[in-house]
Image (tube, rainbow, N blue to C red; front, side, top):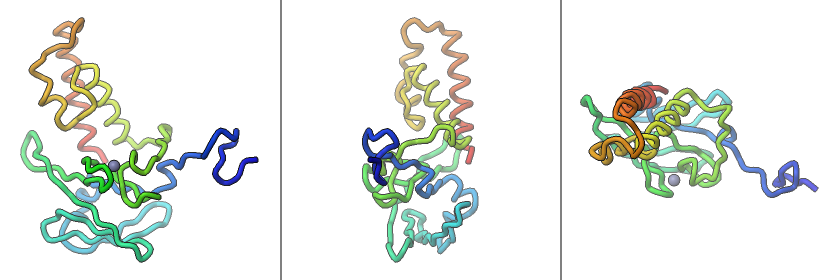
Length: 184
Ligand SMILES: [Zn+2]
């Protein structure tokens, strides 16, 4: 009973957690100047290191890992107050993400790597994102922090929500979202 792939209780395979894979946070890369054209060394506190090459227009990042080369596209969205924000494109589901993980499935988003999220080990940024998403859902914007407000704000407060509650939650939402995006 209980081989490498069984859970302690024998109810199926143990899910890998994001702690067992290497996260790459594009906000952090940007902050550290590692989205500039050229080769950069990425380091994790676990001691893992990896080389990453960014092309001239910073539209792709190429990772060299154990003689394996993995390429990820980078896209940009405009910020409300000018400038632009970079995102990784998951090569598996083609959605935009701030964080990708090196795991079984190559470099992909958390969902595509089928990783279980250990909420007690969430980073501050992840917590801020979750908080903003929760507010967004209450306001009827959904969990999409990029387009949710833009697409749904004209609808006004959801049924049974007073205008003043809506205004208060909206202010909290905008705050939480800004924090989530600024935080690394
Ligand atoms: Zn994905």
